[in-house]
Image: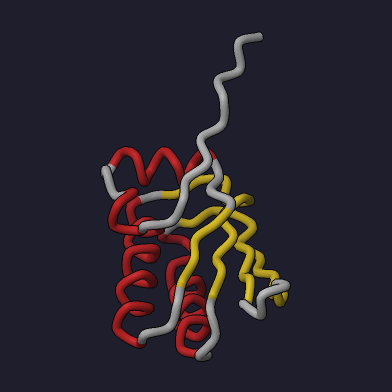
Length: 109
């Protein structure tokens, strides 16, 4: 799992996850998410490079959203990869996260 931090034009901290959002990286991802949320600025979580997401990864996203509400610091989830979209749809949790989901058009080739 690789992490990239950037500052967006609106001053948010963008954390990009590159790899699998899974139990194998859960401890490392959890710490990065909690630290990012508690930093006091808006955390924008870019999941466009997530290859696979298991239930542990989904639980980490839910934990991050709850932590952001508890601390009053904003968390925006952007760039949902197909694996992330599939997980959110499977658990019917789009409303819980509250972030806009961009659903790609089907490839009819």
